[in-house]
Image (cartoon, rainbow, N blue to C red; front, side, top):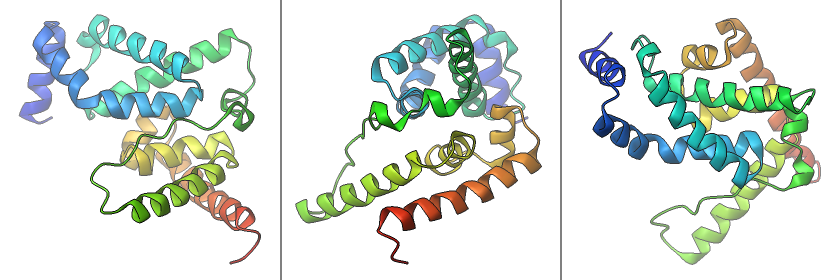
Length: 190
């Protein structure tokens, strides 16, 4: 455990308001983006966002610093969504992330070099998100945590509560499913 992790764990145990403000500022965009992808609903994501930070404040004493704070934060958010899902008696994350409800909101990229590059980037991003929506949720979540949130494989295993081998398997299968969805979405041209 690093000195930063120890200081963070101690600050959370003390319920340090300045530390919490700093953590919210540092992680708010990534957490909100993750929740939008999980819920496919901005209002619901906002509710989970607030509830996640309340849980961080209430349960900060449980953070021991063994894993990155981000992994612990995403675990809290994921568990809230799963609890909500269970209360609604949904059968899977696929039902929660129904592509028919609409794609998650895209945040505009900053410092784009030209309007043309902006359009091309948005078209590419749109195509990836459309293809990603066709990937089964069990694989989509691993892809999002790995490539969008940039968590390591062990951190993903911690967030999902699954063995590392399962994460690796889902990542491999998810990449294959995404590749197939992208090829199908482009009219079959390879």
